[in-house]
Length: 62
Image (cartoon, rainbow, N blue to C red; front, side, top):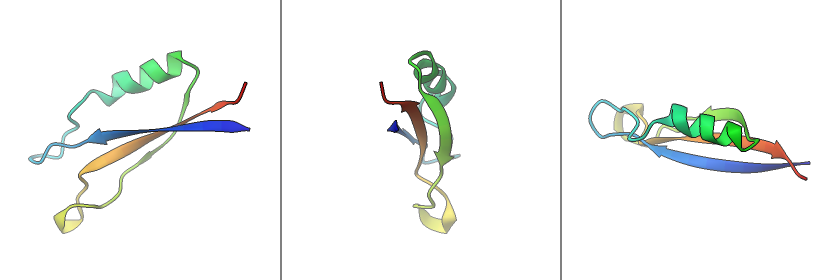
């Protein structure tokens, strides 16, 4: 059995760059025992671009 955590990373309006350092977020969660499973990038803005992406983590239940 696993537990899951979803972290939403907003993208800037211009250039679609992340508003925060997602590399650091991944490192912090890995140090807490979380494993990155997927980066989900939904198409939610005009012209098929995204407004955000989600980092999906899992770790075994203790």
